Image (tube, rainbow, N blue to C red; front, top):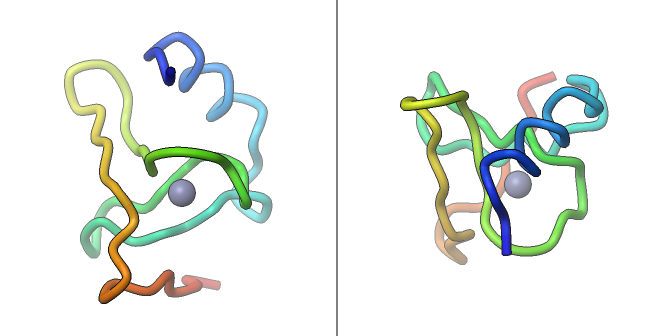
Amino acid sequence: MTSDNRLDLEFAYTSHDDSCKDLYSPYYYCRRPRGHDGVHAAGFGSSRLRWDHRADHPPRMLS
Ligand SMILES: [Zn+2]
């Protein structure tokens, strides 16, 4: 289970360098800790996004 409250905490305690960074779009990337379980997620409140990892959509590092 990945609740919104849990995600808020993960985002708050995960620095940019330590985040997963799986790209959802050019504007959204996963803010969860690198190596996390389950779905990728980005955004806050009503703009929260979740997406499953896709084998044909490999992670790209932004840095
Ligand atoms: Zn992720």
